[in-house]
Length: 228
Ligand code: ADP
Ligand code: MG
Image 1 (cartoon, rainbow, N blue to C red):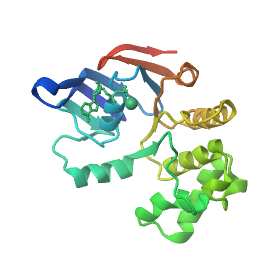
Image 2 (image 1 turned 90 degrees about the vertical axis):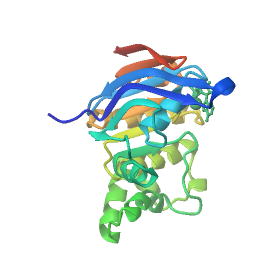
Image 3 (image 1 turned 180 degrees about the horizontal axis):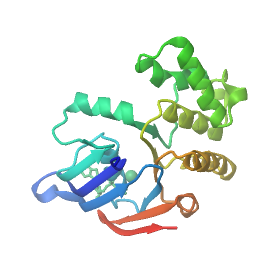
């Protein structure tokens, strides 16, 4: 029996105290198995970012438990959380977050460099990841020489190059035009078919429609969890 990639058990998150107290998550439970592709939807203020921060080990629940790839995040300190994060999660952000004046290849190699992987192996794996996202012919380009969709595909390559348990994307197509959105979603479809586990936060129906499963948050609670 392998543990689910995400195992969220009755998680609450409260910000502030007294008058300013906000219950951003009110008892969220969620399991995501290996290979699943989940879209998390909800209006502004529904708790998506709060949930994303917890799933991404950027924050911890107020109450309840969260196990990432079998690891209980309870009692982990900042440093331990950062290690878990770096080893198990590939992040994809709305704003790409690539390093300027560094080639696509160097950007994708970076997480491997942090992981202490040697030059030749690093280069080979980064090239393979860029090939997977359809950018084999752009590896020496810098971010400002690439379209938005291409930059986001570099970011996807960077997220997957470490073979994380989870690809976690926050509005990955939020800054992209229709064509680039389709290119990035096609890449995620391919990765999903290849067995990667993906959790994607979005408020766009056409993006969520690509996922196998849709979870809808309203006021910090899951009101829908449906498989297509
Ligand atoms: P979403 O991403 O769906 O827009 P958030 O998770 O950002 O929702 O916010 C959920 C609720 O928690 C909102 O009412 C928001 O104002 C509140 N909130 C989020 N972050 C904080 C914070 N750091 N301090 C206080 N309240 C917060
Ligand atoms: Mg948000």
